[in-house]
Image 1 (cartoon, rainbow, N blue to C red):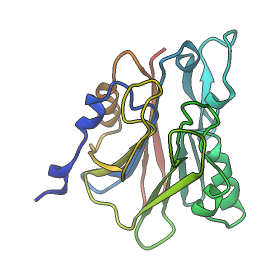
Image 2 (image 1 turned 180 degrees about the vertical axis):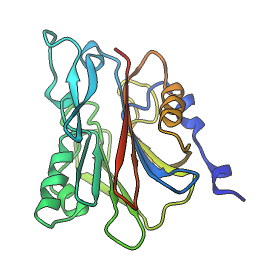
Image 3 (image 1 turned 135 degrees about the vertical axis):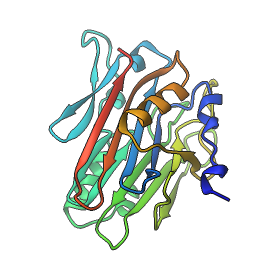
Length: 237
């Protein structure tokens, strides 16, 4: 059976509010690694955002700078350093980047962080890394979240994929669906379908997300041979 036959991509379409999400995988032609990151929002503050580039990095910015700003909403969702490509839903991107700069690791860096202090939601921190330093590309995903409904002990789950599969990605979101507060993501990252073309990937995933709640998305293609990258940003506003 083709591994893509086991994909659960429709989980994103069926969810009104999966929140922020990360996908990492490989294109069907096996020529590129893929990173996808999106943000969604229910409040005016959360929706007052776009993605912009800053050099080779991607950061969140404001549509209307006169509106109230939540500091948790402003960060770099994508950075890279040498063979490492980082993606996350918060300022832990910088934590991982700084650790790698000092020859540390993705896992050790995230063990210094916890979930977001936005009670009663306590949003999970989700992060991903593509590592092109070995014979085969490796990618990792991680989630940091409370072990219960309240702010209690932080549990940290790490997932490592030692060899990408053509046409297959793994997805992790902050929430399962809408709610008050929204239920946090549970279980392992789920399998999703990928495409070859940058625009096709962006259009496919943008159209999967709930029209009222989606805010911005960035797709990154990484050539493991040349380490060249290409970006596509889609902003609602």
